[in-house]
Image 1 (cartoon, rainbow, N blue to C red):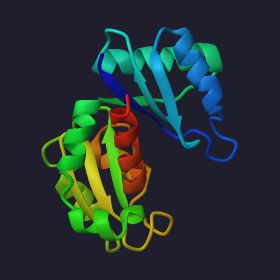
Image 2: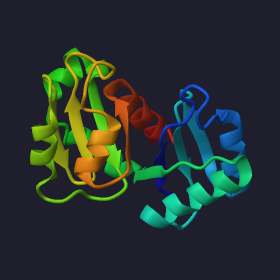
Image 3: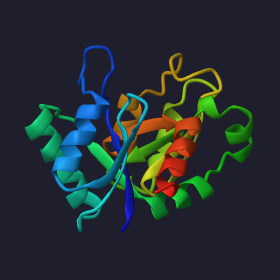
Image 4: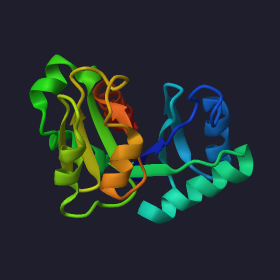
Length: 181
């Protein structure tokens, strides 16, 4: 059985898209997913079961959350193998070791255009560094995400896809959770 890591975009931010992780787990288990586990309150789920993959699985999770929980937000899904590969492909290993809270993995629903990285780099107004690799971008925010002008809105505009980010600490915790099966 393939483990999947599902990231919910923009949940539990203030009063926006509120969802309890226990409710989310119960909802997904009722749909036949197994081994459903959540991490933190920011919409990180590891689950197994089902035959759906990729965009079809994302749509099913979105429809399930909308119907059962009234939650209207994108899900971005990677298999455990894809997650392991994106961790291994990190172009900023020093930052991952020295300051993982300021290294962000930004996962996208769709692959961006070939010139997306140059457009994002041109949008950088501070010391941020960006590398795009397939359906994800790795971003170093040396001065913090909260102070940066390189926002989710800017990233999505230039990458041409909806996405959501997790800091490197969370990325590694999700990898460990998926590996624990």
